[in-house]
Amino acid sequence: MDMSFDLNRLTRENIKKLVPYSSARDEFKGEASVLLDANENAFGSPLPNDFNRYPDPLQLKVKKKLTEIKGIPAENIFLGNGSDEAIDILYRAFCKPGVDNVILVPPTYGMYEVSANINDVEIRKVNLTANFQLDLDKIADQIDGNTKLIFICSPNNPTGNSINRQDIETILTNFDGIVVIDEAYINFSRQKSFTQELAEFQNLVILQTLSKAWGLAALRLGMAFSSKEIIAIFNKIKPPYNINQATQNLVLEALEKVDQVNNWIRETVNEREWLVKELAEIEQIEHVFDSDANFILVRMQSPRAVYDALVAKGIIVRDRSKVELCEGCLRITVGKTEENQQVVSEIKEFYNL
Ligand SMILES: *Cc1c(COP(=O)(O)O)cnc(C)c1O
Image 1 (cartoon, rainbow, N blue to C red):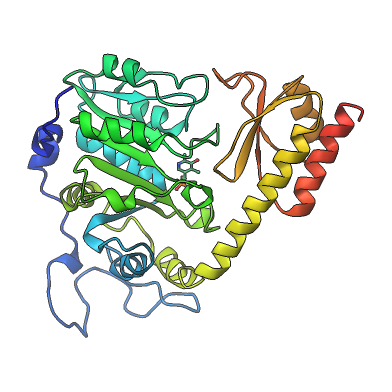
Image 2 (cartoon, helix red, strand yellow):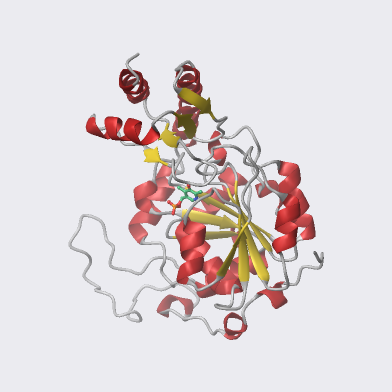
């Protein structure tokens, strides 16, 4: 592995040369009272609120609020239509189809692989170890001059554990491509976020989302935090109006409710610990994996039959029993108290307890 990070080398030629779309609102500076530049409907919208004007392409009001909450400057923030958009942009910015490759560390979030396939980028898989940690030696073996990205999900989906911070730092210091740390579940974790390390690592991209702890999955708002140079590349590639006005308005309102969200996080963590304790007492349950997320991975006897029995009662969990290293496992999201009680009692009933 080589230690010199060179963003210019990593970025695809077509992206370096790209002249981004220039919107009507990009082309004037100053105060405007008559807007006849964007072919909008000047009369308004057939709705109680006006949505007739194109939204702010850089979502600066939302970013300002995120800066207050997270202490990250706006120039280090990218907002996407879900984290999926940030993942796709990473491939399009840095990975030449048919030439470059990325490292994935399964079992992990499926979207990294799907997005690689859409972009025709080679995937090199290095399984996590038996205790769901990084296999640093095997990762190092797989890296070559065309390896552009490594995706690390921490806390990891579907296993629920956090990845050792020391191991992530080892990769950050030794890999000259980009290290993507997906922190979708960071709010539920005992480990701290990498957001305070942005100044230290030029090759760090952190993904977070409003879809989980913030309870805004339907609004589709994903965040990427990185150096201002990398964020500038993302902004150049993204569709000009990727975050719609309704989402920007509602997110601004929601970001005022930090206390409500923190209460839900505390409650979720308490419920998670209750679920762990209850499930661990069931004899047919072989292992309840330690979780830093809002779900738990559980290894049990007859997982598919348990899954079907739950579905028959209208309870849907995720069957991960055919996933390598997750054999025999279901992934159960932590719900409200009654829901958690229900899932436990139905599992007990299945085992005739
Ligand atoms: C749920 C999830 C996301 C969130 O995706 P959005 O597109 O922002 O809803 C991202 N990464 C992981 C690992 C997830 O489990």
